[in-house]
Image (cartoon, rainbow, N blue to C red; front, side):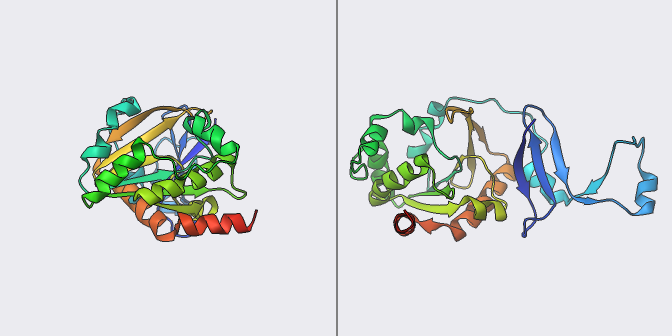
Length: 245
């Protein structure tokens, strides 16, 4: 069973770290091994196969809060938030491509070499409308090296979103892993509502999980701040990519 990185409280890529064992409700904890003889002597019902580690309480509170599992809902149920938020809609994109892009006429036009940045659409119209009222659309996209086809598509398309008023920045996956950023997609509205995406193995959106849990929202805010600080604006990043192709 694969592990999914949840989060870390380390600034240098070392332990402690939490992982989710995919397909189960188990959490794998990476931390400093307990060696103090007095502590080991006080442990109860120790099995020969068990080992013990210590982690900060804050790590568990931030990334593994005790809460009842929430139901996944269709993405369509949260679309009103893109009109109703008060000040900031912030997105982290972590995948190497999205099925929702690959199955569109826009993707086909892009593969033919057409300029897709100037096309208008409903998303860009709403960005213009909301930013006119002082609201902000912001996004950080993780990018691999070498850049994937899906990421190149988003980079070219993103120029049109930027022109409409959305601030999109790009961050290398290597740096994101170094800074302990999550490897799952989410929208964060007004630093209050967290909308986490659920994908299948073909990059198709299955739905979203909505949370206002303070610990989960705080963790998303911390990820946002770290990503935003290190990410590069789209126009500058695209110049870098083109210079290496």
